[in-house]
View 1 (tube, helix red, strand yellow):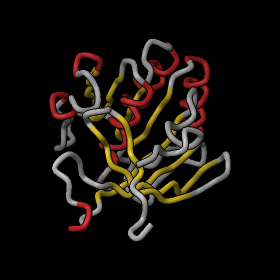
View 2 (tube, one colour):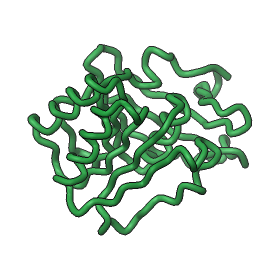
View 3 (tube, rainbow, N blue to C red):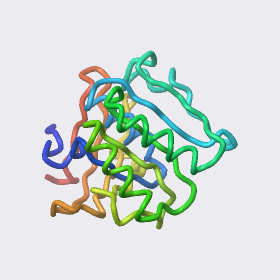
Length: 188
């Protein structure tokens, strides 16, 4: 077992990043655990899938999570921008349902820089902003060789990185040690 390169994950602070795929929520909570601090989760109130903070206690203390339901994406972006700029929140996770324009993306980057906070946009597959520092695609891996009662194996792909390297990792969250473990490929 070994850790994911810390130059790649956790994602660069004081920037905003994007994640897509069915494992996006796990990625967000793993990032929250790695960053340590208060987390704000912002999404539109009409969305059918709402998170339950108690479901993620293996990652973070539910008392450090603030849920904010908004009217629409414009309000989601406004709340996220203010939270990032305040510096009071370590990680702002925003669930987006529409494309993010360059202007909105740039405003989020500036707010993250000013507040020294990290932003993470959960986006639908195939969507993304040019202003994002990194973009990840995350999905669970259903393989009988990797069955574990502790955690589901995840495949994390870094599909955009303004700082360089792209890659693919198979990872598992270890709830006992509260750390991310990279699982080596079969036969290695």
